[in-house]
Image (tube, rainbow over the protein chains, first blue to last red):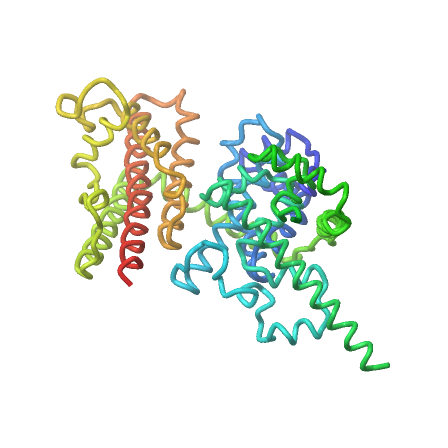
Length: 201
Length: 241
């Protein structure tokens, strides 16, 4: 599986960017802005937070570029910076909002704790017909992040556990709970659509 | 009995499961169970659909924000190097004061910090030492080799060992702690950057940089340890409820 981050880059741009060349930095930004912003959007609650993560990721990456040793591809290093920044942002926002609920997976405000929680009740959302993207948005923050990092970005449970300062079992259980929740959300949505269609007929 | 969702996910991704026998049973079960086979197919479909979601395009103005922050960072860096030791010292002292205030607040609230967590906060430039030397596994006992008597590089190395030896959970900090830790890490990165270019600098300059590094690392150790203590207090508090 290939990640959207897998973009080849002129190695001299990395060296120039490390030395503060703003044009090289702009070229790197241009090459990676979409994958960084996409992963930020999937992990964070909204586009405003994702844009902040986008900016923080590149500022931190350029400030720390001298730490990049070239042992792994640049895209993998940058992806790690992006994920760490997004998760840190998520954690900060969660703490700010809840003053530290536990990380067992259930709290986080349930489905309404996610970015779909913008005033609509669960049943209202289902009546709208929930697609996969909406269902992802209805997951608790941590579960959503684990699904995206594992299923789409291809991180292992061990890597996700390290990102989150948790255990491998935590990552695995978050993933299976998230998929169970996605199944419920999507099936209910499908059932609601069928019922609505019957009523129309 | 149907295959658990966790095992289906492990089968879907060809993951090596802790329960190999369970996974083999699950594979055998799939041969004869249309429900589980359908569920496995559904999980694959969800994963494929997630991967096929369209990318998100950032607003065009995002680069301007980065450009401004990099400019501001450049100005701060120049100010930092002009301020040198004074800034590093004030930052670390500030962190130390903040830590002590936090500890005092916790104690004033009557929170039981527990035996393992009730040690006073390590104070920069007094003696962060004994436990660090003892924990490092070095032969010299804390009573004979004190932290502040060690060469700067050795102190820096010990602090790094201390950070590495912390449990993974200690990386989970409050929002305030996390931002302080990030700032300290960034400042350490700046010092490292300068150190990497110190071959042409005189010994005095290198010594200053190593001193800054030790001060900042000490601050970072404090933030991490404070995070552990805070969690201990929170857990103790929640157990009492």
